[in-house]
Length: 309
Image 1 (spheres, rainbow, N blue to C red):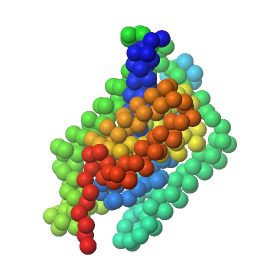
Image 2 (cartoon, helix red, strand yellow):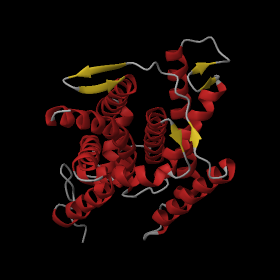
Image 3 (tube, helix red, strand yellow):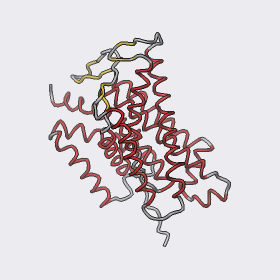
Image 4 (tube, rainbow, N blue to C red):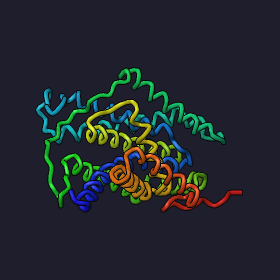
C-alpha cells in the first residue's frame, strides 16, 4: 500500500473513532457548560450504553450475523435498538442528576465531582457483577460490504457511523440553537441566577442537559459495540478519558468545539498508532491534554470565564 493510500486509510479509521469520541465529548461539554461540573460518571454511562444496546439487540434475536427471533428488517431493528439505548441511558443520566447531584448543588467545593466518581464506580461494578468480567461478543448483523477508495478500504459500519453520528450532532446543535429549551440552556450556561429571574426553569434545563448528554453517550456505546464487535466493563475508562481530552481540546462547554475535538483525537490516535506505534498513542493524546491545559486552558474554541473576584 502506498503512503497516500495508508494515510487515507488511517484518516478513514480516525474519522470513525472521532465520531464516537465526539458523541461522548458532547455529554461532558453540555454538563460542564451549565453546571461547571466534570461528570466522571459519564465514562460508565457510555459503557452502560454498550451493554444496553447488546441486550436490546439480543432481545430482537440478533446473534452473530443472523436475525433469529424477528422478521423485522435489519435497519428497523438497529434504529429501534439505537432509540431504546439512547432513551435508557438518557433516563440513567437524569436519575444520576436527580438522586446524587441535585442535593449537592448548593454546596461549594469538590463534593459533586467526587460523587460522580463514586457513581461511576457503582455502574462499573454493577456490570462487573452481572458479566463476571467477561468480554462479550457484540452481534455483527451488518452485511460484509466494503468499497475501495484510492487504495483504502471503507466498510459499511464506517459509512453508517459517518451518517448517524453527524446526524445526531447536527440535531443537538439545532436543538441548542433553535429550540426554546435550547435557548434556555444557553442562558443558564451564561448566568444561572439571571436565567432563573427571567423565568427559566433551571432544574428542567439541567435535567435536559443530563438526558441529552447521556443519550449521546449511549449512542456512542452502541457504535463502539458495532464497530469493534465486543463490549466489556472496562471500555468506559479509556474511551471516556479520550473523549474528555477531546472536550478539553475543543473547549469544554463549547458544543462545536467538542465535535471538532472528538474528530481530532480520533485522527491523532489513528495516525500515531500507524506511523509511530500503538503503544505511544496514549502518550501523545494525553500529552496534548497537558499542553492544552498549560498553554490554552479554555481550549481551541472556548473562552475563559471572567473572574468573579
